[in-house]
Structures are given as C-alpha cells and as structure tokens.
Length: 590
Picture 1 (cartoon, rainbow, N blue to C red):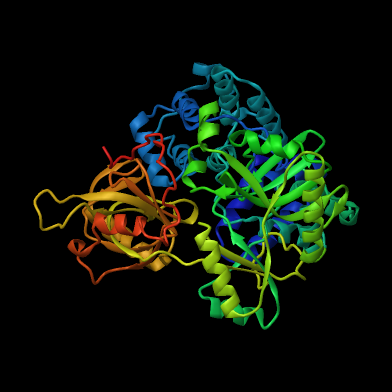
Picture 2: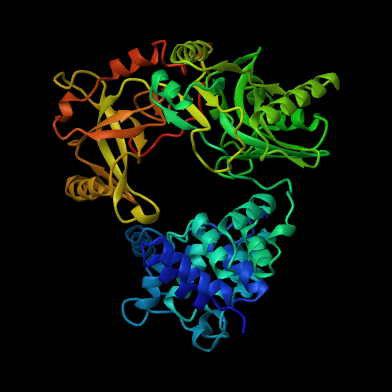
C-alpha cells in the first residue's frame, strides 16, 4: 500500500514529541524500513523539510498569501483572526491544525459544493506520491490561479488536522520536528543496518540523502561515486581567543597560516561551461556574482573549490558593505557591478578532473591548488589563491595576526598541513583567531518570536543606544541592530515573561516594548547603514550577557559607536567615499 501523508504525519509527530535523539532516530528507522523505494525517497525528502530533492534546484514559488487565500476559501474565517492565529501558533502549519480541530465549532468549513470539489470525508487518502505530482505541477505553472487550484485540491483531501499541518510544513520547509540531517542519517543507518560513517560518506558523494536511502536499502552504498553540482558541508575552524592559546593547540607543530577574509564563504563547482556557486546555507548564489561565474568559466578543467567571495579592487579586499550592495537585488546593473567589484579567492581544492581530493592531506591539496592557479595563468585566466606562511609559536601567530588586520582582513586561520577535509566538522585541524571590538550596553526596544523550538518565546531582540546623554532634552534611543544568540533557554523564558508585560504594541510576531532591559552586545564590526535610525549597524551581533544590574540610562551613547567605528580595529570602515545603500527601514526607524 502506498505511504500516506497521514502516516507520515503520525511518525513525525511522534519524533517531534521526544527530545531524545536516539528515540527520534528509532521512530524514523522503523518507518523507513517498511517503505518501498519510491515512498522511501519521498519520506526522507519530506522528513528533511524539502518539497524537492536536495540536488533539485526547482522551487514551488508558493507564498503565504496564496496558501492563505486557499484556506480562507475553505473556511469562514476572518483574515485578521487567521493571521493572529498563525502568529500565536508560530507557523502556518500548526495554525491550520487548530483550524481543522475547531472546524465544527468556532470555524465553519465551506461546503464542498461551494468549490466543486469532492468532500474531504470521501476523498481517497492523500499519499506521498500525490504530493510529489502536485509539487511538480506547482513548480511548472506560473499562474497564481492554477497554483490556488492545485493547493485547494490538496488541502480538501486532508482528512485530519495533522495532514493539513504537514502539507503546509513541507510547502514552507518548516517541519520543526527537531529532526536534523544527522538524525536522518542515523535513522537510515539503523533502518538498513549500515555503519553511520558509510551513510555519511555516501551522502557526501552523491548529495541526496533520499538516494543514499535507496542505496542503503539495496546494500549498495559502496557503489556511490562523487558528483559535482551539489553543495557539500564546509569544513569549519575552531575559534581561539588568543595567540597563546592557539600556539598551545598547535603543540609545537608548524601550521599553515592564511588571512581570514571578510566575505561570503563559497564553493565553486565547474565542469565545461557549467558553473555553480553555493554558500554555507547550501543555496545557489550565481546570479549575484556574474563576474565570478565568468572568471571561473574561463578556468581549465573540472573542479570543486572552497574559498571566499570578497569585494575586490586593485589587488585589495574592500569593506564587506560592497558585497552587501549586491545582495537581494533582482537585477544587477552595470553600475552596481562596476562600483562593487567582487572576486573569488580559493584556499582549498576538493576535486579535480575526476579525482576526489578531500581524503588527501592539505599539503597535497594545496600543491594541486597552486598548480591549478598556474595553469589558469598560462591559459590567460586567473585564479586568486590565499598566501600561506608557516607558524609555530605564539609570537609568530601574533605577528601574522597583526599583518592580516593591517590588510583589513578579519584575522587568521591556522591549518594542519596533514589534515584531510572533514566536511561539516570543527576540530583542532583548523583554528581561527579574530578579536572582537569592545562590547556595548544597549537597550531592548522590541522583542520578536523566534523560529523552530523558539517559535513560542520572544527570543529575537532589537536593541538601541542613546543619541545623546539621556539626561538632555530630546534624548532618544536609536536602533543599531538585532540579536538572537547568546541567551540560555531559561533566560529567554524569563525575558519572554517580562517583555510580554512590557509590551506597548504588537505588530505580527513583534512586540514593541518599554525600554527597560539592557543587554551587553558583542560584534565583529561596525558599519554605516541607512537601515537603522542610528545610521550604523553592528555586524554579527550576539548577546554576551543580560545586564540586570544596569538601568537603561546607563546604556551607551551613539558617540561611542562612532568612535569605535572610526578606530583602527574596525576594519569595516570605508577606504573611499561610501555609496548609498538601498533604504530598507524597519518598523522602528520611521
């Protein structure tokens, strides 16, 4: 019997109900084990929260308004009440579940005759392959009306609240069951009695976990070979606070040292004229960097490079703001490209002309990268690569760090020349050293509901500094950023209770709050921005601690932000006259 959406919902609800990873794994393993190949593919795909395979670049192009229109056509709902229900529920899927539960009392479903479709109670069970067929058509159609028809046909076949909830969750890629990729990998290993390392290795090679599932079911994991054009997890560096601690981690061994660049971490896949660029979020970013794509297309051979896209002019890395001016634009004009030039700087070579190099030591990969760069130069192309030096002692590390900062780079990365490329992992093979600017005491002006397990708590905080001494007439708090990391679950729960009491207005998921709470905020850079009333923005802000001991009047002034912005440690300060950013003001910056 084909796998139904109802069964899928029951299994994933059970997995979501436990916080124990091993229990989640066992629940999914039992489910996967009993499925035939076509359903196994889809069940793994949807459990990962994707409507399409990981290597499939299609999208549904279905937004909130389209689904909302469909739901409002099925139930006698006030649009404002439904919107508030979605906000309270934290996501549209759980809101729909409540609608289905209460349809006999508070909400009244429109009769099936009103829209000419078969009543839900008599519809055939909705199976996973029905979803796949509908998703194929949703992706292919460009008309809003046809998208609404397809969605209405799906939702009217949902016979219970959890089917409706999971249909929405898959559409919006918001499963929120606590089942991450590692748990899915472990579940497949358990389901088909395979070593977890073999499952992980196979996924690295082929890219799609659903294909890995079928190979595991057929005892064919060893038959997988590497394919380009699917993103792989990036190897990560472990932070070090000081040169002395970094030297201690080296243990007297010589490590490669290279500048830590301030750009967008990216991997470039290239074969013939085809080029794909993936970011750390596993998203394609080709359209934002046509100049980089063209430069890579001129390179000889077939390869996979790891590196950084940076703003670049006359052999120098520019402030990151130049890259930001490219992001989010539907059309990149010739002027934008000229004023904000970009380049890809490679620091690792993972695949070359049929040879997978990730298992080879870094010294071999680095030698191959240098050869590729030389070959590109000989053929009239250009491949920029990082410079490396060998360091062993704290003094050598400190000297290299100062030199990197003088070149306006973030800091340094130290790499063991004998290390292989451990995708998706941190360890002592790669270390990074970058100092932060001084911390700032800021006042919370708004609190917003989070995502995932934090969807029902206020975990995202907009913060501000005083534009002048708060004792002076006209003193105002001006926003300078937003942070959502650094607090414990217990602290967030306490802040949620407090901010709900301090709320003076609510706009969707956001509460405007009385300025009572002070947070100590750390950041990597300060840059000018028209997004905030302060005229500045903190880059990579994070909460160091809650300053329960401080009154709002003791928070920092804008003048201190300006002083640190103009200081030498702030390498985001401009080297030339700033270009205006696109104005995108927030709710509080009117």
